[in-house]
Amino acid sequence: MTGNFTEDGAVAWRRADGTWARQIAEAGLFVDEPTAKAAATRAAAQEQREICDPYGIEVHAEGGAIDPLTARQRIRANGPTIRLRRPDGER
Figure: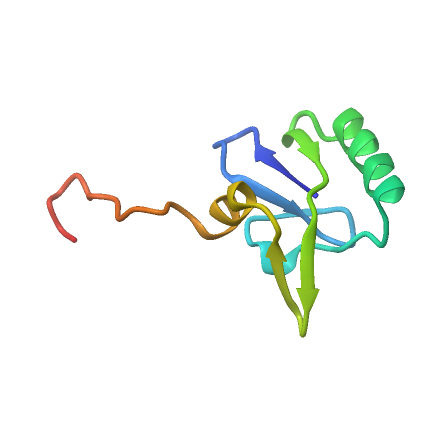
């Protein structure tokens, strides 16, 4: 399950214990879609101050690695697809 932290807009990943992390590697996994949807509904009702718009995504999980199945979610998990310039001119 993913969403965004309301404080700074950063991507959030729901851990198995119900808390939120900033890294997908810490995310908990749901075994089926109905369970994930129910958890997203509960999270939306309970977490509005910390997390906005939580929803479930499909992933491939193997050997402790979690890989989102869509390009959008891979970008959210791994960061920008282009190199960002720093304001101070450093690279």
